[in-house]
Image (cartoon, rainbow, N blue to C red; front, side, top):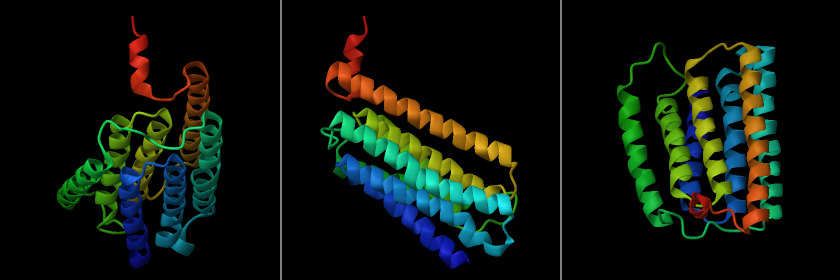
Length: 214
């Protein structure tokens, strides 16, 4: 079980690094979709037959939403705005990978020293969760296009979800569904906002919108 969890966690690290180095928005969306599927599989691989019915249903819902519905919504938005690449980000891709590697080292150091209330599924889960959260934040602040920043928000939430899987054994179903509903609404609203920004200004570069301030 732990070996399977470690493989998924290493995969999450690789997807985070890929996102920091990718410029094509379509590839970024597909990478986030794979990350969502991996996160949905994580509790199934670690708890297996010991999971309650609602836990299994929630894991399947995570896979369908994060691996299917959200990426489909973002790909549809991508086609509507006709933006294929993240051009000239605030921090270049080579530097982003270097910063990401440094963040990973810091997260591993921090995760190894953080006291936990109970044993976790893998020693990698907390560092990887921290790294996923920090990768999402880095994407939000280092990229120009609104769509990439939405992906950063999704990655950030993926890290929070991974941290919750590590530390919370049982969680009320209504709370879990409420979190998913919030994410769904956020992605839906962000997609609409990106579409209208592109229609009004012929671009989705958020830094150019600062020129509209009086």
